[in-house]
Length: 541
Ligand code: ADP
Image (cartoon, rainbow, N blue to C red; front, side, top):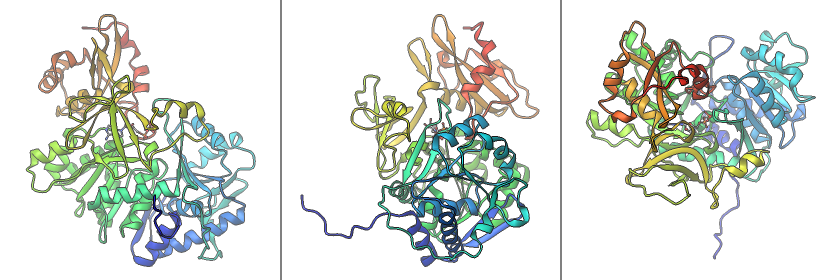
């Protein structure tokens, strides 16, 4: 093997902001703030503040490898932490504030965080959890002196930065140095930590720009609703500065009306987030009779996007939908739809129902229960496994979970069941744990939900398995109706029968006021099973 003769320069996260500040210094980072009002700064200003923050962190005693935790919304200070913490060789540990306080306390202990930076919204949570935090943990309120919280021994972010030099001489870190840590939400088990490196974060950021190029570039303004506190906001804090794209951070206000106003006021061109958020925006667009003027793309993932939602956005509002799939363990984006120009409306919608094609660097395979590879023929369904430079090689300090997570060739088991078409489209059938096994056949809960929400009276639907003496399991469908809508179980089933086989239809439709949601805005089947446990007693069918 002949070795290449190229410089051994390492991929580095702070180099991204140095690049952005050099090459497109005037691009903006706009934030809707917790304290109220909008904050607007350039990439050049952000780079200076990141330098100051790095000095401040080192002055506080943060050492390479230390974990600096955050409990914060999408905003400029949170963004600055991503860079300064990683830049000094420490690890930016984002925590999802929507988790149960017990889970947050457990995660802070497990990560052994030495600093916790929090938005004022989370002051009550931080005060309550303080006795359960690691000894000596330092607290930093992400605000200015005027909003100093009434809590002893809390540093104020802007005070820490004040007077610090704006340039930090970033250490030459090996590119596999840990940079960020994010725990899975425990949707299907205990939280597990994905520990990203400088290299993996940048490989992912490059792939995201290449996979969804329409959202990026000069003049584009992207609004990440997907949080900085979970799954790295799908890599946007790294990919937007690389690709000269303005960032518009929504802060704590994620309802349809607030998003509409922010998008309109700031001329947002693309929004990225989970389906539930866009359901709120769609309602608002219908109320106002228009989409925000410049909005042309919504990238939607995290759970399956129902065809009814794709149709509403594409046909009613002319907004391009890109469907993405991914998970914490993949940094997180794995696949995204690739638009084909010139398709008519029906072909456009059909092309966006699958979860998209793989990003560069993400290899996909599907296997049978015995591990044998299955063909990518669009028919065979099996467990989805992935590998690539942006995929975890193990869980942080969790050998038991790590031992179960990979096959013998080192591919990561996603826990999802999927098909792959000959064209390379990924079709997620279900999470392994959510599939409904009826009489030896599998029924996809996603298919049932999509069929139900295509009925105009249905706002939301979630399918779960109910144990059955004869069939093993049968589907039970929980349905939330739109305000004022009246519809019978028989009507919903008749509607679903247009697209589903009779044996796949639910045995029962339970009308509920709301479907429990997880901390990442997905339907929580775990909680729904508890909520509907009485329906198990007398299975119909
Ligand atoms: P959690 O929500 O448990 O923290 P992640 O945010 O990492 O975990 O979610 C990953 C999981 O979300 C995937 O394994 C998959 O089951 C589901 N998921 C993500 N995107 C999609 C999608 N577009 N369609 C269907 N399922 C999806």
